[in-house]
Length: 184
Image (cartoon, rainbow, N blue to C red):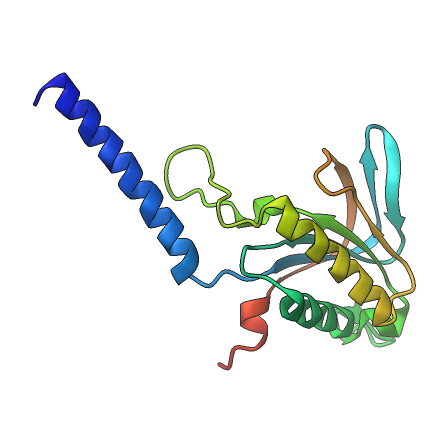
């Protein structure tokens, strides 16, 4: 094989791999993802300034995909506010965020959709671009408020953020919208 043939072969392999990755986006159903961390307190700073801060409640790391829309936003918000992971008087996880007056800090995080199967640098092709993700994150925050959460704070979309999470328990729950409606 000549050097030119080898280069063309490598180029063709790269094109084929890219085409497979793009096709996988449309065949595989990725869903909005949230990592809920029950906290005693949480805050986020940008350029040394606190931009969001909460007491008892959740810090939520939220990832959005290309396929997400308002249906996913509403399902995830509903599940979040009604999920019973706060302790009752007997120390059992029987209370929801609404029951305990929890506060919520939402941090947009595209890295939740990292694909590290190949190579050493993860791919983020499954994450929605900012023009899709940013309005859906804003709608998620609005839905949480509309459902009765008194204080909802957030980071700044697309900014480099430092997030302080004082995890309580620790209790950490992963929610994917595709799994919320799935039957066992």
